[in-house]
Image (cartoon, rainbow, N blue to C red):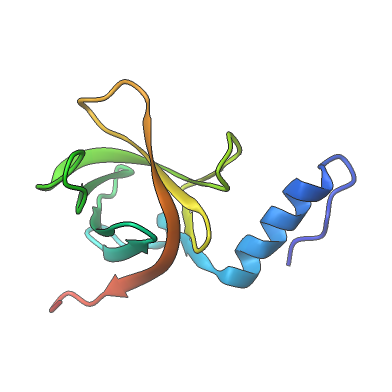
Amino acid sequence: MFRPHQNLSDEINRNIIRSEIEGGVYLRDLPDAAKLEVQTRNRHYMVVLRRDGSAWIWGHPEFCPEPVLVQISGSNWGGSMLKTAYLGRGMHMEFRHPDYEGPIITSAIVDIRLLSEAA
C-alpha cells in the first residue's frame, strides 16, 4: 500500500492513493495478446496487448475506428503526471498513435475488463 511521500504534493499523494482504491491494471502483468475492454466516459475501446508493449486499439470514430497499432503510455489524472504502463479507473488512458504527433488522451476510464480468450 502506498504511503504518502513528503516530497510530493497533497494532490499527487491523493491521486496515487485514489488510483489504488479505485483499481486498475498494470499492463506489464498481463500476458501477450491479453484483450481488455476499456470503458471511458465517452467511448468503449477494445485493446489487445502485445509482448513488446504496443497494443492494437479500436473504438474511437476518428482516431481508431478500426484496429490500429499504438503504444500505450499509461494513464494520467488529467494533467502531465503519467502512471506508466497502468490503466486505472478514474484516470485518462494515454496512447501514441502512428498518424498523430502528440499523445491521444481519452476521457476518464469508468471500467476495465480483462476478457477471456473466447470473448
